[in-house]
Length: 216
Image (cartoon, rainbow, N blue to C red):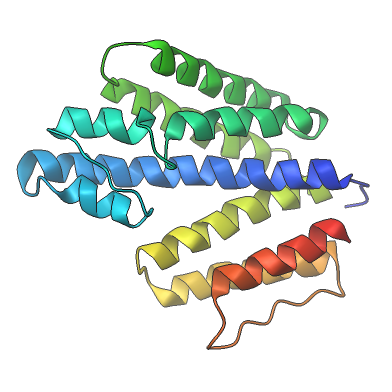
């Protein structure tokens, strides 16, 4: 795993992992809310975005899809896709070639959707999810782990913990993910150890330790 990374590259790989995981997880939740709006609960999208501290307004399921993807709010997925590309460019030499190409494809979808006057096409969501799945697969197939790979993985796992906490998902699985995060921290810096007390905010603790890891 011998690899010297600048703070800038380590940060970019970490945030690339977070953005990709955030986009993927959010789209899965959008899909579920979309179906509920059509069938059983018109306010499913409102409830979903409350978890992201966003007051989302829409008229129907298709309008929800459009507002969720490119509405004027902090959860705008087009902005997240563009941010993923920016971080990928900074850390280009540390990203598998196929994965980098797929990140560029993601940005092309973002550009097309943001420029278009038509509502978001449901197929765009499938395309984005498919590309992100291919990105994770391309990175995994590298067959060896370097520091850059671990920073990308940390971003993915920390974002996953954030989602699990927001949605109140199974605590046992969340703890398993936290154990994996602790293991990666140890691999990158044996002197750092994540300790979370019952009264401590898990995400704040992770952010604090992540800052130490990147600065060190």
